[in-house]
Length: 109
Image (tube, rainbow, N blue to C red; front, side):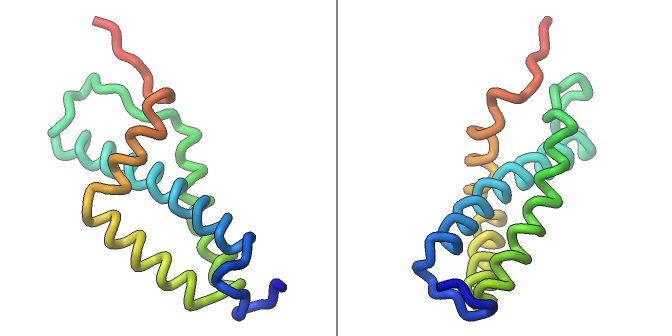
């Protein structure tokens, strides 16, 4: 049963939101790292970036977090900490690179 702030951890909606949160966090982390590498000069200026519609995922990440927080605030905070740990480690960046590889614009030489 779904109730605000006290939904059980094994609720299908909460598990689905956690999976969606992980996927969206991986995509946004990869996008952020790509932009940071471009600005710092680690990537060439002509390196292909992700499409502009990826910016929607930044907002979607916060919306999913708010939904998880409203359902179970403890679970949302644990998910946020796990996301932070995976963000510091290159786990989310690697997963995001794999997920977004079909959408990266190809450069032709």
